[in-house]
Image 1 (cartoon, rainbow, N blue to C red):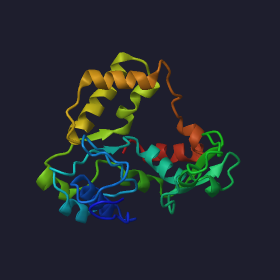
Image 2 (cartoon, rainbow, N blue to C red):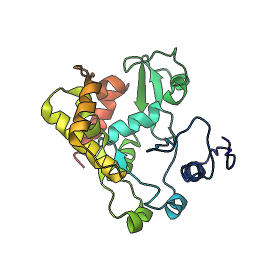
Image 3 (tube, rainbow, N blue to C red):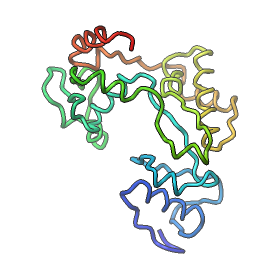
Length: 233
């Protein structure tokens, strides 16, 4: 970057948000970045810490809340991505041997890696499974968000991506509605027709294969038994 100042992009998520804000306010000029129109910064790896909530203002920073509705899917993703696997499980190869070398956080950087649900699975810790699932129940707890942002609606990833698994018009409408809700939270006036058109373009007349827990979990039978004994709660 050059111009009004220089940014040494921090590894800290909150600091990166503050640095991006300086760019948007014109205090710092970044080369090859035109901010004369709507501008979106994708800040990866950020968590909503209390100090970020204390600093951000609705006029500059908007929040959209999204999570998976299925807690088991969330735990599977955490294990596959090696996001603090202690007490959750380990990623394994199809034969059950540890596969930390294929953690998504690593192989995403390696375009030569070729893995699928058939070759890259998880072996879940059945002793802690119920507690891990309960930890993801409900919506995000962000008490600092309420005073200035009012109620930010929560949308589910399953609704946002439902259109990828079905060409049914009703399913498309379900996804379009969720995207409208998320865009509204982000301060973007949604246009239903435009959203539907964009989702159809992504579909391109095709649907994705719906994942099955039995394909992704190496010890699926043991997990199923734990869930059966625990009951609906």
